[in-house]
Image 1 (cartoon, rainbow, N blue to C red):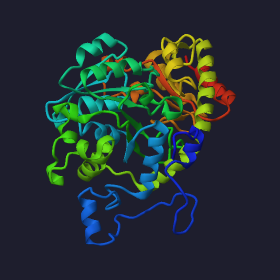
Image 2: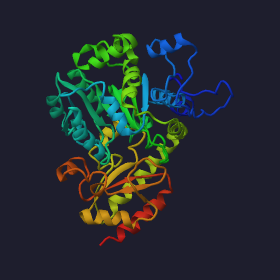
Image 3: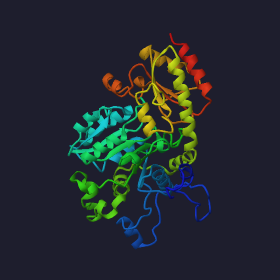
Image 4: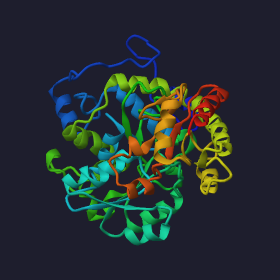
Length: 427
């Protein structure tokens, strides 16, 4: 669908059309493992990557493909690959870029599971991750160089709500000849489109705001199509001849679709982290209301954050939509429609008060997710960031006193009232 259409129109229509056989207006769930070939030549051309089409649902599925096209449209990208989870999306984004002994640089302000994946699990592949405070742009510039394979950040950090200076990071990545990879899960393309600020790849946990109701696991990688993988020997997977496809070179053959084609033809083929058609269907439904939901999420979050700033049990509030936030300027620049609805605040009572608060609320759900229509609360130090050291938790914005909120779509006064009674009950 043309990018000249508005965001709301593309949220509903991009990637889909009436099903040609039955005329069904809603995208069907193509619950099938494989697809019949027209003839032997057709089968051979598909396996040789000479023709695009469906072979096996580990590599591609029509329902999933509709979601991929819609996400590429909303982010302003060239192509997209959907996978089983957000963690799978991070693996898929880095897999073509990395090899044993290679290094990438990532922000210290990431979801705790991402820090564990990057800092521990990826070491088993021989991949090295250097974590840096990406507010310190000079330190980032000094850390990246000819051997760096990628620069990775979150546009809006989980859990602390820090806003990344995307344009500055993109310039640093470009100078080092490596791609900037941005996790845009918390912002969604409604609030921020990182490609407009120089990013090369965008990743999502589609489980969160894109689906919007906590029903479907998924992840996605969207490629801008702008990075020239042949400029450096670092990215041989995309620029050098591929033995499994008779010496085909993805950059040379597919140009701005090189990354996306490789992701389907090699990464999904060999790692197998395919998204189910049912989950893709549920995410397509969620995307239809994304603009409406994000407006309400942001409005509610600002009201809750303003209340928390006034409560005597609260030491601080980290929400980029508040005038008191050090990220206020960056939020106005990169997230002009709103600073999202996931943020943290600190309790004067520390770890014990955080653990007590999540047990004292009634309307807020205590669970490890964000982006639901329901409002969610979590104490990261005892859950999502528990595997990290105290220093790592502090650097990630998840210290002992921190409580994370994902503000949902309920009546703001009800959410505030529940938080007030819970806060008032703390010793």
